[in-house]
Image (cartoon, rainbow, N blue to C red; front, side, top):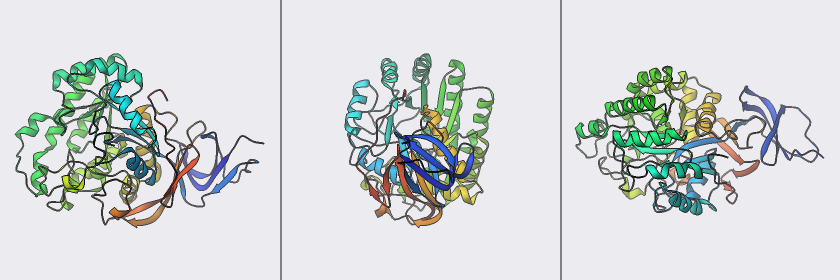
Length: 445
């Protein structure tokens, strides 16, 4: 008898070497081999023939606000991980804020892990937080297994997670660099935000003017300077300003240890289409103009931007008021991220291999999850099965998010996720979910 337990066969399997017809062998939750399409099925193994549906590695989303515990009416591990699984995501890394307590001490991290333990439908890791007064907690959190540390350079929107000024950033970054950690940064400069017009009200143009590009550009320049001085590893979160791209490209060419992400909403939605009062489109930094979007896509293609993540940041519907100044800023995108990005990518001439690179391979590399992000021997048997040419119209009632507010309502998207697999077990198919099978990950996994 062979050790192979499962074989997934498809005419289109996305591997690091390209897309090809193949049979993927699985044992003990790991991929053991990628065989030719017509390779004999090992005795005792179960064959799942996927036909022409595409087999791709499960997506790894490294920017998710689960908000659990403390603000579970906004989201929660049960609902967030179900939504992720429905969208082909098999691993997420949870942000340290919007939960109570925030993940800024080891004790707080333990609290969060206890809450998540029996609710995770997919694998879950955790970021720590860097605050003005918790430098002493950073190394213990790193040793406990967080994947890195999040900091804000402007107000976060919640009082329990204050932002860092430049001196505080330098102290935190020096400490993180001392143990080889990663700092991930919400980069908007507070002085530029304070100087921008703050009119409030329902007009999206007024909100856009209140979060100018130069706030991002200045903060990114400051972060690059600090990283270069300390030889520290830093990551720019949710880039929306294309004006920062030349600065980023030059820093990378100079050897600064810098990576950059953007989000589906910046790649698929534009300021020109946002109706006044429609705060389901509000996020910070904001969705910008179509010409800006074109440059973000170009930067993805040439590698200036490394990866695409959701920045899933939900709230209750009542917080999405018609006043852009007071509405909660965040877009819910977990379940729809693959389809949204694929829809626009195919229109622009990109292939699914590109999407996998941006949303699985590079995100896995960002956090050092060497067992994720590719279909090859030795990796976890995490998969999404996709019908890339089928379409669906986004119905908020069909979403698994706790609060079904979405900027994508009514949009027709390409890419139907047939099923999602975690370590060789099908965890969702045709809207039917298994009981939670996710594991809580640490940086050393």
